[in-house]
Image (tube, rainbow, N blue to C red; front, side, top):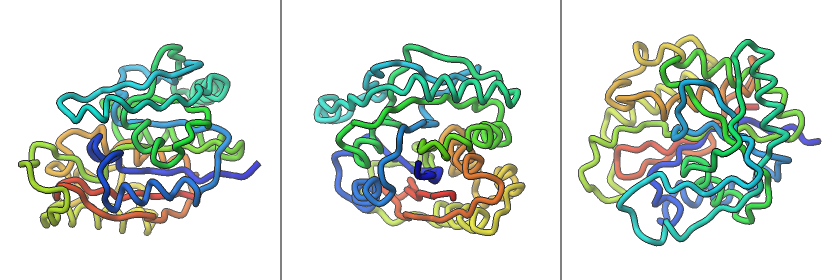
Length: 260
C-alpha cells in the first residue's frame, strides 16, 4: 500500500470548479500527480460542529451549501461512494487519542469537499468521508486531530484539509477573478509558507498573534484550521511543500501544501 501525503488545498469560491484559472488547473492535474488513494478523508471548513464527528454515510449526497451562484453549479453532482469502514476506524482512532470522535451516518459532501475532489478525481470512484472541525477549540485541537489520524496514511488514505489560505469575503467588492492581491493578503500567505517550511509549529498555533494581518485575512478561523489538521496528519517530522500558490478575486490566496 502506497503511503499518501496529507494535503491542504484552498477551495476558494464554488465557481472554482467551472471557472478557469491557476488554482482550477492545478487541482485538475494534481490528482494524477498524487496517484489514487484507497480512500479520502476530508476536513472541510464547511462542516463545523460542537462535537467531533466523522461521516459514515454509504452514499454521501452532494450538498449545495451556497446561494446565488450560477445554475451550472447546482447541476453538478459528485457521486463518490462513502467510506464507512475508514470513517469508523478514524472515529475509533480519535477516541483512542482522547478526542471523543463520534459517527454521523447521514452527512454528505459539502462544497469544501466535492469542489476540489471533482477537479482532482473526476471519476468519483474513490470512497470519501468527511470529518468535522471544531472552530471553538482552536488550532491546537485541529493539530491533535490530524496527528491522531496520521496512521491512516500508511493504509493509502489521503487526509485532505480543505479551507483557504486567506478568507475575508467582506473585502470582496465584485473585483475580477484575476485582481492582484493586496499587500495584506500577500504578507500573510508568505508568512504562513515560511512558518511551515521552517517547521515553526508553535508560531502557527498562535498565528493570530504572530502572523501579519491575521485577523484581517481570517476574521473567523474555520478556513485556516484545516491546514492544521493536514499539518498534524503529516506527522511530527513532516516536510511541508507548497505545491501551489495563486490568488483569486484578489482577497483569496489559493495556496496548497503537501506534508510528507
